[in-house]
Length: 483
Ligand SMILES: *Cc1c(COP(=O)(O)O)cnc(C)c1O
Image: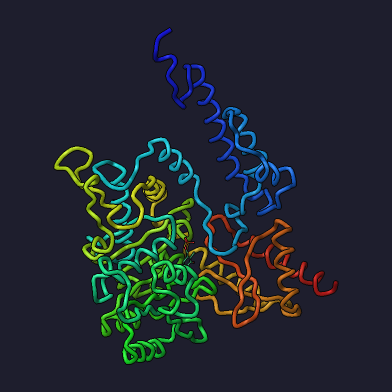
């Protein structure tokens, strides 16, 4: 027996084992493409049956492997049919993207190549750098702006805020930490996404450091109130650091007056951070750009590619106008990670120096391949289409005898209610609709009242889907009200 026969690996053993896995892999690709192609014919969402729930909750550690074919069977039976539903043409809950078939295939390629993308001199680093450069250009940021691809908007926003805090704290926060200095204040609106509360808590500034400014009737931050709050804080000895404005609020799709807030930040010496988690791609469209103008003036801008750019989860992006300030907030210079003059370590760990994580996956590849294969114009055309669909849905609701709009429709989010139903009944209508498998909107509360909320970041939706939505809500509503 040759000694290497006894050595272990996780690779298939023989030529024939490789071939068996290869056949399984081909089957997986076929099944997943068929799944996406036929998604319209399936329910949007369905509850897990007991046997699947129990398979996923109760089975013990698999000490001995059952083989890839058996594991794949379990995936087909218990996992694939019971996803949240966001690949479906009538999924409009929260703000979720569909993903694309090209993006799915790119994920497989990225996992096969499996580089660790903390930096260094390799193709994956250049792919990520190129995607960041494209994003900076698309968002109207200066050439040479810095950036990082992240798991999502929360992480991208957190990084942007951390850079802004470091740049404007007024002392060496990395060295000294937060101790006896003045209270650092960050401003947002009452409509700002909950990532910011978490970030303030995590960064040690606490919710006490957060100042939520009121909004106008269009759910936009009141800039006059912002100005007063900054002045009052300065008078009280606190230190204003950063304003977080939003392009596309999660409740209604409102965008703050980014130009006025950018001007105010310049005047006051504050960091201007924009949360464009889903709204940012509106800037790529000639038709929609004016709705988010001022976004290009951000000192830091966070947005998702897995929402309104339709790429598979997870991928977000943060852009920072000044690359020095970006590095200054994170670079560490650990001895075991230093750059060399040549070889793979040339160039250093540029991405680890721009954020929190060291080891990182090749998530840029799905963006790079999606953009190269589909083109930005095709993606932007669907963004335009989603906004037109939101207007179409709003017009159906306005024409309906039973439904009423609950807010303006500035972008791709439509909030409405069943007129004759009370709060509990509107909730009941939403839950029955979701359980029916016909469509999945989500819910929210506007001015203290519940509303059904349709967020359209879906490249598979057609006009007929919104006809079906309205018809089904009216039908369920009639039953709920009369029961
Ligand atoms: C979704 C969202 C976030 C959070 O982004 P994730 O990708 O879910 O982490 C932040 N802000 C807004 C406005 C969002 O819509």
